[in-house]
Length: 64
Image (cartoon, rainbow, N blue to C red; front, top):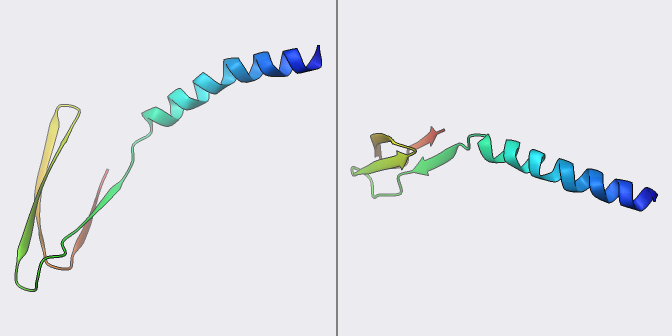
C-alpha cells in the first residue's frame, strides 16, 4: 500500500516539475573564434523574436 501511494505521488508530481523546468529560460554563450581582425555575425530566432548581433574575434556574449 505504501509503495502504491509513493508511485501515485511521483506520477502526479513528475509532470508538474518537468513542465516548470521547460518554462525556464536558458542562457546561451556565443563565442567568435574568427582570426584576429575579423567579426562574427550571429542571428538568433526564438519564439517569434529575432536577435542579431556582431562580435569581434575572441569576444563572448550571453543571450537569454
